[in-house]
Amino acid sequence: MWQRAGAIAAAIVTMLTTGTGYADGMLSDFPYPHPVRQYAFTSQGQPLFMAYMDIQPTAPANGRAVVLFHGKNFCGATWESTITPLAAAGYRVIVPDQIGFCKSTKPTTYQMSFHQLAANTRALLQSLGIERAALVAHSMGGMVATRYALSFPESTAALVLVNPIGLEDWSAKGVPALTIDELIAGERKTDSARIKTYQQRTYYDGRWRPDFDRWVEMLASTYRGEGSELAILSQARASDMVFSQPVVHEFPRLIPPVVLIIGERDTTAIGKDRAPPEVAAKLGRYAELAHEAERRIPNARLITFPTLGHSPQVEEPEKFNATLLEALAGVASP
Image (cartoon, rainbow, N blue to C red; front, side, top):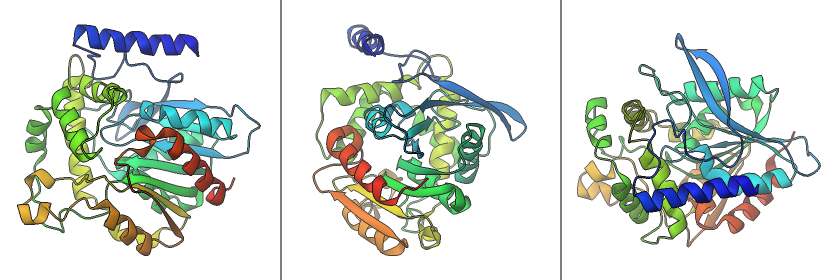
């Protein structure tokens, strides 16, 4: 533990003193909180690997597994403050990086879909001997996990959605579409300053703490150095997937129990920056969207954090973890 903490601290010092941070599209030098393994498989005719962490219970095992799904601008490492309390409660915790993200393969050609990412994740779990798990999903991960629960309901013990994007259909509300080429051009403008400005305004309602900087630099580093071109392409494909494959219309078909954990100060909405002003003003209203989702999802429970934003697990880890453990105890079963 002390060695890992020392490595993380040293990496942060390097980032701050050199001004360059990590510079690798595969996050090769970015320290994860637990050992990273690789699940090798073939998909769409090409060899790929999913990076993942597999954390065993540190208390008497309760026979349950939890899978943590990251968002588009996040990685498995972002769940570091949540992993420890889950393991201490007896859960086995699986934390993958989806194909196209973070430490996983970023293919040159790949048809990106939520069903494909969900199927990849199910194959990973089956390779680990896990046939049934609770899904805890944040941001874009909420759309992946929702598709997983719709496609594999018998394998889903419960679905916990943490500020998921996709609670609304942006295209149906009037946001214009962009081509992959246009999305790539936008991704090329990304750097640490832009990421921080966007996250501070959209995720945290104008607030900022120094410990958020690490997650900004994690994302920014994938846009620099070796592998950055494939990372940019993957991010553009992901943006297209998020925009063109809504899951909100299928909420009434969800079978497993669902818990929505929502920071109400979140204003995330894909395409808000390119929508007409009268449309943009109505997007990303999580305090309203969460209640609409609760009404449309069978067997749903809504928990709100009125003062928190897009990433409650990052903003207030202790409060979030206590809430998550209580919610899982009420819905998850082996």
